[in-house]
Structure formats: C-alpha cells, structure tokens
Length: 96
View 1 (cartoon, rainbow, N blue to C red):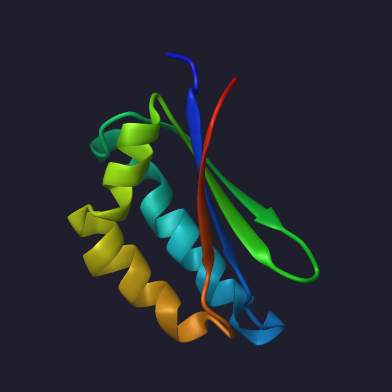
View 2 (cartoon, one colour; view 1 turned 45 degrees about the vertical axis):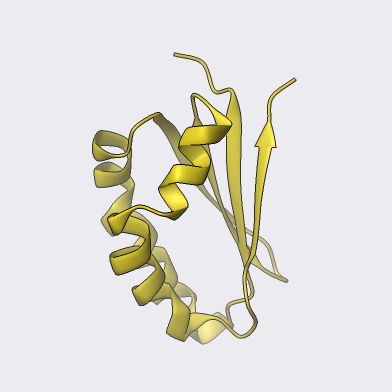
C-alpha cells in the first residue's frame, strides 16, 4: 500500500525528557504498525526546537481514527503528556 495521508504530531519536549519520549516511540512503533487500521509508517523526527512523530496512513480517515483509538488515548497520550513543555500541534495532511 501507498501512503495517502500523514498524521504529524509536533511536541515541545525539554532535552531532559527526550529519552523518555523516544522510549514511548520505540515501545509503540511496532504495535502501531501491526494493530492500527491503515497504518503504514511511523518516523521520529528530532530538531533542536521540537520533536515530531510522522505517521503514514492509507487514508486521512484512518489517520483521524488513530487519534481516537485506545492505543493513542490510553497509552501513548498518557505516557507523553507529562513530558510536554507546551501542548502539541496535531495536523493531518493528504498526499496530493
């Protein structure tokens, strides 16, 4: 399958909390790819000013549905929230 949509979550995370955030990424990367409908890719992008997780999906609908999934709401979100120094930015893009 080909990526048709991206879910981008941009987080402000202090340097001291970045190893914990990276652990959340690695802990959930494989379950995300195996269990979330339409999930195709997941990449961790690190910049000096923020951290992004870029999720590739087969549709924008599946990208939006992930944000409402038990995995996101009860696991990923819960573990990441204490690490944020500001609320995250969440965007969904459709591939043209």
